[in-house]
Image (tube, rainbow, N blue to C red; front, side, top):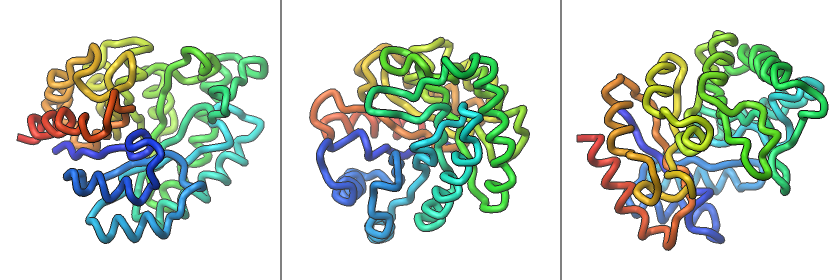
Length: 265
C-alpha cells in the first residue's frame, strides 16, 4: 500500500521548521521530508516529530558535492557518511542524492570537465563505492534525475531511463530511483509507463504539478490517473508531495488530502 508524506521545505514560506511540522501534523499528515540537514537543529526536529507522531521519510544526503564529479567522489562519500549519522538520529532510512549539487545560481556545471557519458559513469562509480556503506547502515540512497532547464542547464542526470540504468548497474538493494513527476513531465513525459517499466528500482516518488510546480490540480498532470496506475502496478513505497503552493499553504491541502484519500480507499 502506498504511504504519503509532504515536504515541509517548500510550504509555509518563512516559518520555522518545527512549527511547520506542528502545522502539517495538525492538518493530518503523519510523515515529512525536507532538504538539507546541516542547517537545521536535528534534536528539535526529532523532539517535535516524536511529540506529534510524525516520521521523517527522507532528506537530502548531498549538499556541497556532486555524484557526477569523479574528482570529488571520496569527498561526496564522506559527506554522505555524515548524512547517515543525521538519518540515524531521526530514525530515517532514506537519503535523497542529487546528481549535481546546487549553488545560488543553479546546479553545479561540470560540462567543461566531463562528457555526458562520463558524468553518468561517475555517478555509477560513486554509488557503487557507496553501496557497502549504505548496506552496513541499513539506509537506502534515492537517486533523483532532475530537469536541466534555465539555471540548471548543467544537470547531468535528467531522465528516468538513465537513472534506472545507473541503479541497475550498481546492483544494490540500498540504491534506488526517485521518480519526481514534475521533473519527468518537463523532460520527457510518459509518466506512468516510465514509472511502471522501472518498478523494480523505483523506491520513492515526488509529486508536484507541471509546469509551475504547484499543488495537484493547478497544472497539466492527471494525478488521479497516474496514482491509480502506480498503485495498481504494485508500487508500495512512499509518495511525497513536494510542491510550492500556488497561494496560501493550507488552501492547497484539500486537493492533496482528496488525492491521498482517493488512492487509499
